[in-house]
Image 1 (cartoon, rainbow, N blue to C red):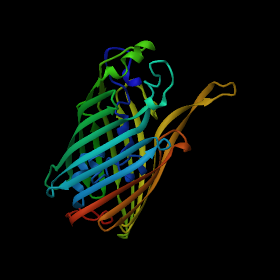
Image 2 (image 1 turned 180 degrees about the vertical axis):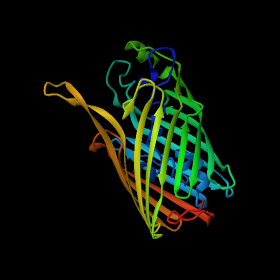
Image 3 (image 1 turned 60 degrees about the vertical axis):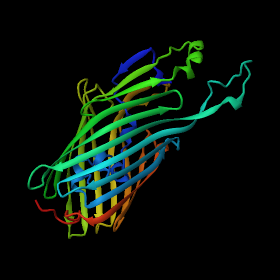
Image 4 (image 1 turned 90 degrees about the horizontal axis):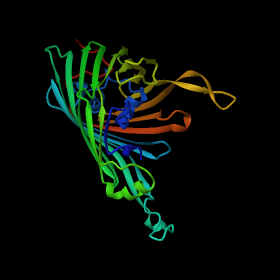
Length: 363
């Protein structure tokens, strides 16, 4: 009901517009607390940083992910197709859905005589969709710099009550030299504007009778934010991989509940670590989502606050062209919110000219 607001038409720039995209895609990225802006180099890079698509190790990749969080209420699905056109450029298409299904519609619970009739209760779904079309290209002859972008379409469907459509652009930049990589991602670089329209016939009478205002349309604006990060790949005896990554997300839409916050700028850090053996088995972990929580007091109120963060952990297995990743993540604020995240990646056709992750990269 919050979507219907308090006026006939209104526009807003909420801090958490299109928050369903904050979940991320791919169990690897989620296992590293989303600290992958500098190292993502597969189909999921279209989401994390499209510039990383140029470092794909196969010509074609398919990526899939499904998980459920908040005790299975919210179902999240991802599908991606990435194609490497040449040594210098690549593209991808990404599909994301986050939805709550089988929601009871009780607006018509009472019949004309005021009696409760459960046969009149029908169910509906409330879902958010994102479609990304991405392209990336190497910028210099030494293939150190890459630039990428994604055209993003947002769609929201709330049963027969309303729909929304939005459009925005993401931009990414990546620098790779030997085992070092650095990157910057500008999400919603153009600002993503979503226009909602509501079918007021479905709820007008009930809203008027209960004292709620009826609106016919609204606009939501997601303002730009920047993520910068760096990673280093340490290779030991061509068998073992140790790759730490640190990144910072900077927002300018007001004070947020993050580690570093001011009225003008908020900075949210995240750290991820990936350990690999023989390009076959991977162990991943991370810490992120730093926030300050109020401490409960004996009298039922609050006194002071403490800093908290959410850890993540995951495993990866790569057998030739098939990669299977698993992550145990927390999308809530307590251990009750633990979710199991699985993702699958399938590589097709010949390997690209890029070296293995477990071998030293040339300049």
